Length: 65
Image 1 (tube, rainbow, N blue to C red):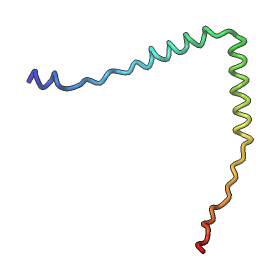
Image 2: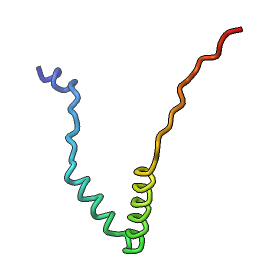
Image 3: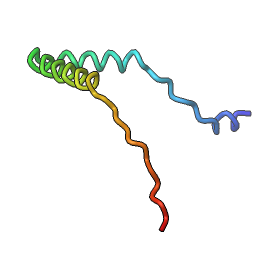
Image 4: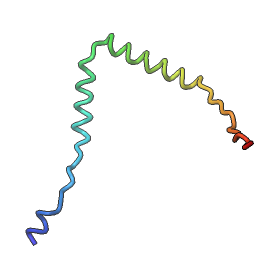
């Protein structure tokens, strides 16, 4: 029985809370100017995506000669 248990791979447990805290700590290292520039970039992208209009021309297969 013990040999069977040794062969089974254990899935690593994901530590999401630790990862989230690490991301927050790294984010706080940015200066206020960097945060402002990142936020304005995100806001500009949001406005661009909201105004985007998707157009589509139907594909017409060429006729064989």
